Image (cartoon, rainbow, N blue to C red; front, side, top):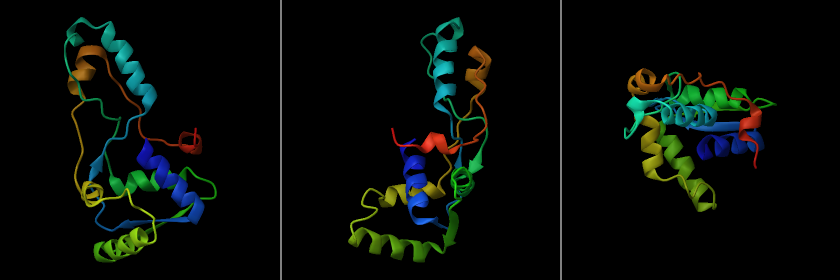
Length: 144
């Protein structure tokens, strides 16, 4: 995931990562191996032919908690710094002036507060989709 890889890289470089306190939208991070397995399972499952499925990860967690698990996977462990939304916006504006965070637009900030959750029940029912929980390790965020 480009977002979490970027978070890990910045946090490793600085030793900390800043989030607005209201970054509480729900997420279901999914491992690429689970997606690959789902594709293979769906190929052999007649009910899946011609269907479209949501393929979320195996658990639902707040955006903040997803970031925190990402940071905990790194060594040394970067610190999560949570700030009021207005301060985050101010700091982001300064970072943009300095040539940093140009790709972090207002829509991305809004998504931190929005729930992005999906129902995996049809995929489980039709071809046994059973994704793992989000348990990142540092190797997942290595540049390739």
